[in-house]
Every structure is written in structure tokens, then in C-alpha cells.
Amino acid sequence: MEKITKILLTESEMPRQWYNIIADMPNKPLPPLNPATGQPVAAEDLAVIFPMELIRQEVSTERYIDIPEEVLDLYRTYRPSPLFRARGLEKALGTKSKIYYKYEGGNYSGSHKANTAIPQAYYNKMEGVRRITTETGAGQWGSAMSFACNHFGLELLVFMVKVSFNQKPGRKLMMNTYNARVVPSPSTMTAAGRKVLENDPDSPGSLGIAISEAMEIAAQDPYTKYSLGSVLNHVILHQTIIGQEALIQMDKAGDYPDVVVGCFGGGSNFSGIAFPFLRENLTNGKNTRLVAVEPASCPKLTKGKFTYDFGDQSGMTPLLPMYTLGHNFIPDKIHAGGLRYHGAGVLVSQLRKDGFVEAKSKLQRECFESAILFARTEGILPAPESSYAIAGALDEARRADLEGVSRTILFNLSGHGHFDITAYEKYFEGNLPDHEATAEEIELSLNQSAVPAV
Image (cartoon, rainbow, N blue to C red; front, side):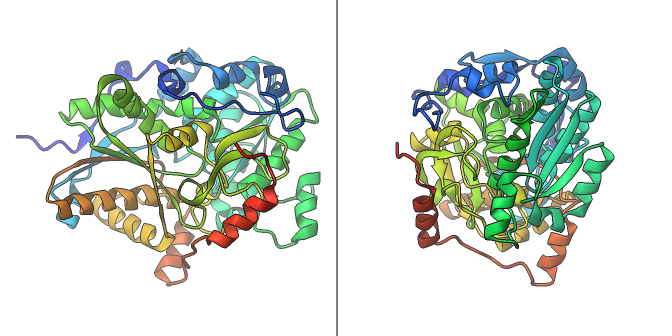
């Protein structure tokens, strides 16, 4: 029998709709609240920073939403993305289990972020927006958005978390190449940034701070809107093309996953691959486990609290019902910058609360060890963020072997690590410290956040 290693789809097999998990959730998520009134946020409240079509998608309960043809045209330059059977990795582990990975690093940005950057730029352009502001952690989102904005003729201002700005100069230069302006955050450009710098001139920054800065600028100009790369419902919606493709590819391989694994920052790449399989659990009687793997230094799903909290540090966003470490939480300077976010997306949070998804945390050295094993056996250098998914998949294979069973494991390799080579250098030098957030640190942050409890 022929050994299948790479499972491809044709353009005609690419999904033409995004999947909205809200339609199938037994318990719908709680509404975002206006912090001033305590009432559910109205569409007009969001219109200051988002275009109306994205607001409609944010609150939609429709099961499927059509992908515009202009978006499909750009998708076709890199989609459908390949699914691989990790035979080299399986052999190195000596496992009885089968390991598959969906590779999202083969596009211009090198990560899954292009899947939502393209539609977000498109919808803004269609509504007459001239400039977009955004944040980026490790730079994948900023890279994705910079090309998409340039393609649709939009200006882009990116607030890049300062620790990543210094760690990953290649990402900044890539964004500049695509015509974006990149500012290290916290900055002196905004009141939010200046306040942080007054309290801590050496602040490494965080995604929460960068979001505050980007939103502050967007709110000052009617022709400027804000764009977010994870967390929100419409962002997760766009990423479901990953899992929908993977469903077709697993069927072509004559297999089906017992467990689906993704790294976890705000929720976009995990949800993108997991939610279409969760749909099968909820509607067709499947029983796939869905596992989100987050950093031990930023463990909102495993050690955080489910409550209403702000999505940014300054309190400019609505209050969101989510697992959080508190919006004042500043994560340790791990190299997986895209996972350094204090909260979890509303949809994942509700599903985690209801027991439909699992979560675990990992220290960064173990994740880099897993990434290097993967690179040596599969040939792709993973992004530091993706290394958490690899480590989670290896856990599943080893657990199955100890139990004497064979499982089918699927994980999302959300991006490559070509711009993160200095992180690997630190690892080989033995200069990549582990950090685990303590219960005391988390409790202090939650107390300082002072938001209403659910």
C-alpha cells in the first residue's frame, strides 16, 4: 500500500464559506458589555473602530458565511494549504500513533494570520477606510496585515510589542517592505503608552498595551479603523478555513483525528483548526478531543479566571466574558510573542468552561526541544508559537504509547520560524530561561484589574 505523506486539495475543493461555531454552541457566549453602562454593547458602539461588515460577523449566529470572491482570489495564492503525515517524527518517537500536521506557514506572511488579514483589509477598503491601526506580538500578524493593506491600498500603523520589536528585527523590516509603519510599544505616541512608560520606563510591553495604543489612534479619526489579529469572533471565523480543509484532507487520507492540538495565545489558530472538528462532535456524534496548549508564563486557560475583563490594558475595549489573568498582567519575555496575551477569546472561553475543549500549559525550553526534533525529522523550522502545539502533540503520542493504544493526532503548525532564529540561538547557548506564572502573581493581577465578576 502506498504511504501517504502529503495530502493536497485542488482549488475547486477549497471551502467557499467560513464556519461560525456560535450556531452549534449549546450555551451561547455571554454578550460583551459597555463598561460605562454595564449593558450589552450595541453595534453603533463598535462602529467607531470596526467596519460594519465585521461587526455583523462578530455578532452573527449564521452557521456559514460566504467568502467574498476578492478574498478567495488572494486565498488562492497559497490555499488550500497542505496536510502532512509526520512519518519522520513518528519514527523518531517510535510511536504507534499517527501524527498529522496542517502547515499554515507557506504564504507571504509565514503564518496562519493571512487568513484573517486579507478579509479584514478587504472589508475596511469596501467601506471607505483609508488607514488601519493594529498591534502585533511576534510580528506574524503585523506582517500579514501589512501586505493585505498594501494590496488594497490602505495605510497601516503597527504597534509592535517592544520585547519582540527588539528580538525580531526581521519582522519589522518585512512590515516596512510592505509599506507599514512600525512603532515599538509602549510608545510616546499615545496617552496609553506614555502612562505605561511613566510607571515603567523599561516596560517590555504586552499585547494588551499595544492594543490600547492602536485603538486610541483609531478612535481619533473617522477614516481610520482598528484591526485585531486574534481573540474576536470574526477573526476566529476567518480562520476556520484551516479546519474545514483539514476535514477534507483527513478523509482523503482515510483517517480521522482522535485529538486535535493547537497552540494558544488569543485563540485564532487553535479555533481555526479545532472548531470544524468540534462541529462534528456537536452535530454528528464524533468524539475528537480538542487541546489548546499555552505558555506556563501566560496560563489564562489553565490558571486564569472566567470573568468579564478588558481586552486591552487601558480599558478601551468592551468588557469581554473570558478566561483572563487580568488586563494588567505583563507576561514574561518568552520568545513565543504571539502567545503573550492576558486573555482568551470569548468563544474558546465559553467552550472551555462548558468542557468542550481542554487546555494545558508548557514551559518554553521543552517546546523548543520539541521544535528542534520536529525540524530535524520533518524539515520545517517551526515558529516558537507553533512549538507549543508540537510539544502538545508529542505528549499525546507518548501518552497513547504508555496506554498501549494507537491514536490519530492532528496539530496545527501555524507558522515557520525563519524570523525567530535568534530564539533558537538562545536555546543552543543554554540561555533560554523557563518561567511559570505563580498563583500569587495571577491573583495580584486579577485584583488590580478590578472588573465586575460574572
